[in-house]
Image (cartoon, rainbow, N blue to C red; front, side, top):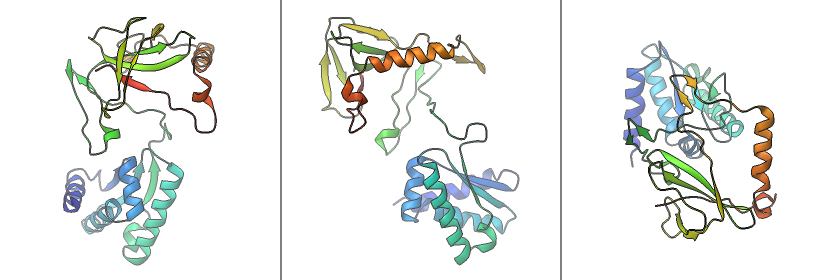
Amino acid sequence: SGKLGDVAVFDLFFRKAPFGGEFTIFAGLDECITFLKNFRSGIVNFCGVALALHELGYRPVGVRIDSGDLAYLSTTARALFARVAKDIMNIVMKYVDVAVTCQRQPALGCVFKLVQVNGQAKIKLSQDVEKVTCPGEKRIYRLYGDDGRALIDLMQLADEQPPRPGERVLCRHPFQESKRAYVSPATLQCLQKASVYWQDGEVQQQMPTLEEVKEKVKTGLASLRQDHKRNLNPTPYKVRFCL
């Protein structure tokens, strides 16, 4: 079932990096939801390791939630900690806190994933298909129909031949083989203007003005079909690969 492995990972991590006598659990979205729903994995492991390390002089600080419904997850985690503190570990768990992301950016709007190092493609593997990344440096193109409406966004590897207007291109779902379709764009737009945006801790491209950002958003929204923009049951806009 992997439960013993979970405990071993928790224990090993905190033995190696107790952060100067205090430590924090880092939980991702799916794992955190699982922990909070069934109370049989992450939080139980956290409490067990916290109790053991408390006897060695290490004080638990809290749980860091980096995605998901932050309000719901934080209050639910707090309620579970209060329950455990009351029934089992009053001294240890009483002051455990719940935090989200970091102080300077309390609500992240995006996540960066590693896809290539020194020209070699890299992939993140996970039991959850949604978490598996698509390896390699890519280019992104928006394909438009004869009416000027956006049809689909297409991702390709950087060294692949880009699509051309009037020619059919096979667009495929990255994980579901049955989801595929041929698209013949009337026009197309490369959404990636440069290959390097951030390097050595510095932004490498000139940042647009607020008015330029506003105009770009308005133009992009205007190119979408109405069914993509309706409030009730909007049609998902497709992003596909050319494989």
